[in-house]
Length: 476
Ligand code: SF4
Image (cartoon, rainbow, N blue to C red):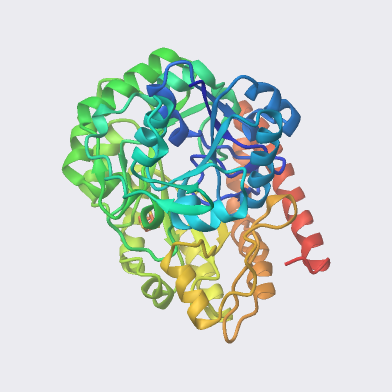
């Protein structure tokens, strides 16, 4: 079979593909690599990854690229599913014999719903789909492939689950597929150096955060890891294939979850002389931070989530504000930059807890922040809680242009208030004299940074203005 692995076309600049943890059009244009699609692609000869949003392909252009393919695996999400169903229909209209599958966390959570939504979807891959797609591509009958749900004589059949992959070293290096099918210049994240190359060194996260999509629906709550040697080998290959890359990003759920392994990987990275960034919880100890810094670490993406301990407890974050303070102090001492992630609208949010979060963000003072709206994804405990307690006011996770929607309200806080608070949060954080001075210094003394800051600043202002329009138009 000729196999295409598709990040389907969607809203302009919609970052919802196979690598994006929450699917939405961002404040500043962002595209994660479609890493999940690159694993099966690396195992199937003649296959192709097509990343329509990152390449700005229209539906027609995407269909043109799909001519001659017998199996199309579409990476879909709760936010983009309705649009992706239409894409599935167009693929079938062009080639009625093509098999169309949907893959990703959303179909894993609600396989039956996905199949019932459209007859154009032939099967759903539940959870990790690397070997599932490979087996179908090799001609195995649907009835014999574990981890899929499909339709037979009008009935929906759920085959037994597929076991999580424990030997991650056996999987191909995704950088091979990046080189074959992608243009690394299409991928950008505002807080990462451009161009960057991103890989996973493990799958899953041992933490239990009730809002977090991937571990609950896709990768599981055990951190399965690749060997340090295997990781370092792939990094070496990335450096060889993409000498223009300015940064490697280890995009694991929580890279620092396995301390001794982090130390081992850092030993290998130290000799490569590269710059790299990754994710961390606030529980990472100072010695590990130092080891990481000494081997080229530039920046950590840190989920602070909230400045209210009560909210952190409500979502089972498993960390304290004190730990966050200590961790941030240690990072600053070592010169490690931080991109801090905050979420508004988590269970039992109030006006006061929002203000606590804003104050906490200013106190932590990371280099950059992102403020997201809590998204109750089907398949998460957060979604169940919202349904049970009547917090859910809206099922559509995104609205016009793919911007995040606020779908929850609480006894003392409306969804409009949560939505509006995002803008206030950003302004209170970024429009401070100290912060503006830091940015001005960069603009004056760093040519590359100047270009980036001015472009992103313009995009960010446009984003705030469009959001304001959406509030006025009562579309939230
Ligand atoms: S620590 Fe991060 S990746 Fe892990 S479950 Fe919590 S939010 Fe998700």
